[in-house]
Length: 593
Image (cartoon, rainbow, N blue to C red; front, side, top):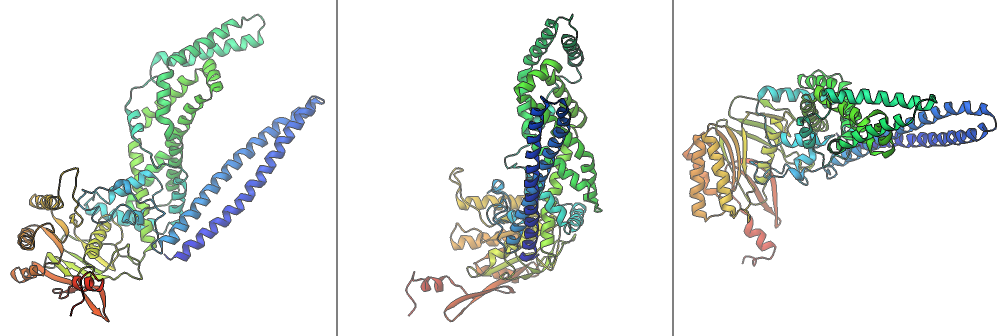
């Protein structure tokens, strides 16, 4: 989808927000007038009692206007969030997507492929895809991109869901706008899961049932007697109120702990209940989304009630309400019992509700990717150890400058050697293969006009780094990575393996010997292997192992004393090098005679 489309949407929502600003201002003026009238009528009421009768109606009108304005303010925030989202989408259409969260907290230097493929961090695949409304969704999206579910039925269901969600731009953007009303960057469910396992404080215990109902009954009865029965001694009321305040103070510490434990979830759960309600309001037909729709139908009211109960617990922060509430009604006992009753009825379902919300929230990111790139193909899933792609490119390279290539490995050769000069495009092509395989394995479209792949593990060795803390050299870190790959293969796992210039930390003779032996190991295993290398001597292995190894290359050329690349993948061996040419051109070494 082009930039202008999203810019027009942003302008439209901004116009609606400006119109709503006027409505809010007018409502505020009316509310002020009503408040002044209440004060005036209260003053006049002392002169003529008739004026007092109009005050209740005006008070009702005042609170109606307050609630109406709060609702309009909420609508305004949603509109402004949609303005912001569409402005970001407009920039992202031009591959400027730095305003979206980049997932740096998910970076793992030792992950089997995510660091090599730039999955997280600035300018990453995660940042380009991320349209999650919630932190739960972001964590699930990160998990989707690092922990592949290699189940053919599951991936097919995700493809179906992404196809269905793609055109639902209003729904997707409304979810994002609602979720972003809550600043939940540091949000964690750990405290909630801990509370779900804790023993009850009041609910279900007969003595507390008796206390919270019988004591307040007699306390309120004594208050009635103290006010309306002259013969009734008011000391009994004060005794009962003091007794209840004493009881509530005895349990103040555990109740305060509960309040602190749950208070962070009030606004977030209210937001989640709205998002659940949105999916409940959608007519969805894909099997995966029908599942999430059913979960949302069950969850939305219960999650909303949970938010209200937390709000009720937080009301005890008002010291006056706390004293009156506990002194008359043992308010703390009632509200804690209510939230514990909710936990008894719904606690076991809560993890399922949150898991469902996280999964389909993450799916919204892939659906937006599909909507923005309708020309990208969905993968065909095959049972043969081969990958074929037509017009394959890296999705993070702008369309105007991206060079696409056909890719075919495993038909029949399962090992592809790619030679080429520096900067010719070898590493980028490896990452394009890895990223597209990752997208395909999530049911998302890939940056290609056609793509098919088996469901195998993904392993890479492209950006291995040394570690001073772990006393590990670069070379030893690379050997550890290769060791883990070989061990997985020997356990019978199938894999797509992408390696960039292996064994860089040793001399050329040792490197060549080691590389040859490693490739021989790969030939014996169930693996699709793509290796980018400068070592052209390895090319003779194609003749040694026909139909098992294929040579390909990226070639460059020098025209008018300028180094140029077409970034096209060709069969055969690279013939040109560029290091000496560039060193001379940059003045590092003297020009040739």
